[in-house]
Image (cartoon, rainbow, N blue to C red; front, side):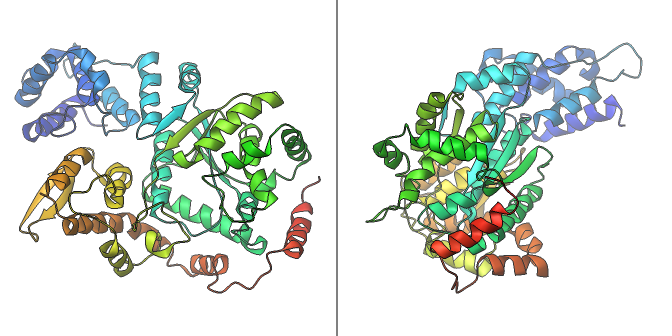
Length: 470
């Protein structure tokens, strides 16, 4: 284990080239570190760069920390560094000590959970759980329909935040929902697609360096055919109005001229998942809001607890509108090769100076910055045909320059293409193995001729019921 002197030397070297812990931006990390070192100023009085930084931070009011962005260094990592610094100094007389208070811990976790969310319903209940000192139990569900595209990086980035904040996360592969939503997925392929989703999501998490110890995967049909769940479906259907069921699913269930009854069941099943997965909170996109408020209204009528709801923004498609797996030119598949990524981004709608209807800027804000921007640096954009570069540490600065015309659409597209390919390289590499290629081809055959009607339903139900007693 390195000595405290070695850590202080490394820190002094850092402040030789950087104004703050995060480089050129003030963050909560500066205040945390200042609190640590304030207990033993003699330990660094011979370190001129630390001393300069220390005196500068002392001029800022402590209350300012609450209005600043989180430090990019994971809380656990920063705490580990603090513990290393807290070893006895060589003369045995000076000791650096710091232990976060319970309030500091839960407040930090709350900030990580809320980071980059559009809305939280039930924030008071969330904070009560965090104050108890236990991790929030969260579930995110996804219907196993189309192939996974870059829009999935938005929930993946948030799930990574939840795991770092000590939450327990369940990912539900909603295979029954996939069929109920206007039969978007044929019964014969449901389990194959669920397997594909699990493999690719694990690959994403591992490529981001995220531990999946507190992450579990559940297949909807493994519990949604149980006696208890089925009884709750009947109980719920006895109190829901047709109007409420249709309204709740309006944003997420495919709308057709002659809707099927299955589309009306969809919101109720998603609400019941909150109870039967034994979670505190459900996470989803803002398009799920009507289903979330539907669940808040009806679950208590069954005697169940109202859950917390966490909502992230949606990344617009490359051609405008919602990014969809069913619209080829609106999305980039995680397995698209570099030349396809380039072609799709070159075709993307990106009007000069337009920052309100710009899918590429949304990708930068909710995918590239959270996943690619180093804690002590920024993202590079090549300007003037590569003659100069500019580093952006804030998406707001990039938006401002784009709105002013200082960054042109072609330059923004080149940046997005570059950083997306960095994210996609390890995922593509993982899917070069023969078994994974076979899985993708079986889950998504180029021409599917299987049945999608009652016969397919009966066949699949018999297979599922073989291991599940109704």
